[in-house]
Length: 333
Ligand code: ATP
Ligand code: LTN
Image 1 (cartoon, rainbow, N blue to C red):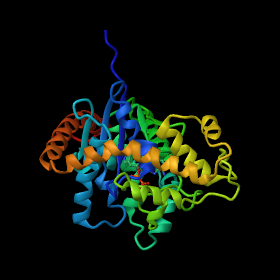
Image 2: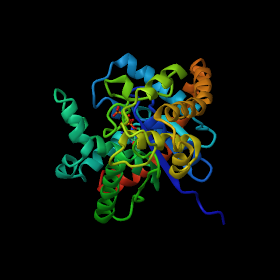
Image 3: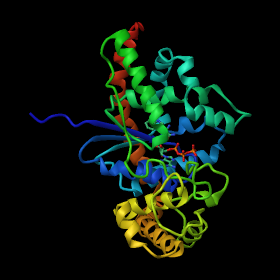
């Protein structure tokens, strides 16, 4: 008998154009998992409104995010892809899970602390319960693996803890999910402040590369990336954060390991190295950009993919949600 494939779930917020960090840390891995796993990918628009968004812009970014996911290689024949708000079971499960999540544990989430410091004028309760909705996303499909960057590890662990607690209270219901984090590139750093994570909502555009940047812009941003005065291409995160970050990017783009990279640029300055890094990025993202431009002109296709994805997701989601409703004692409708 054929054993059932393990399930993968991941999500991305339509809060901007995907950065090289989003790509290397998460999205790049999503199509690579499609054959071995049963994959579900979601554009999480409900998470996005935990910080202020312009409505028309959010709608536009949601389609653009879906187009970008397809352009990076997600095949709707192999994977399920949809928009979070199209599948209401996510928020329905989220309520039940919130009654099984503790105030104290949510208060310890690093992202909540960072985002409430950054948006001090809007510390809404959605920002606080964000990880519970994320747990619902994952648990609703009994996902085994969650491919994310290192910054999301804590949230996946919380989802696991909530699942375990629910199973202990109400009997075995949820699969316990595990984060799937790449060995290199799990935390791509800002090009301007290499001790800080590269983020698509950073106000300094020079700090990140987005997947739609033109070759000229990429060259400029890499050339102005902060490094050090030593002039030696060597991997040393502690003392050479900028160069190590560029080496991580170059390694993922070319498949070369750090030792090979150190040899390749031995005796050469940062100028030569930076040119090579920029070229490796341009070469990797060119086919993605071409496909993205083509897809953006075919909105009907994107809408079809998302509608079909949401229908399939709702079918799956209902199975677990009705089980959960029964277990917690809700009367049958
Ligand atoms: P925002 O700036 O709006 O908070 P973000 O750039 O952090 O957004 P998310 O939508 O929160 O992006 O994240 C999508 C995925 O990309 C997640 O799996 C996250 O871990 C990953 N990711 C985000 N930034 C990086 C980074 N700098 N390095 C590696 N992975 C990253
Ligand atoms: N919180 C994630 C986005 C996200 C997610 C998910 C990731 C929402 N739901 C479920 C994996 C699984 C972030 O990238 N900030």
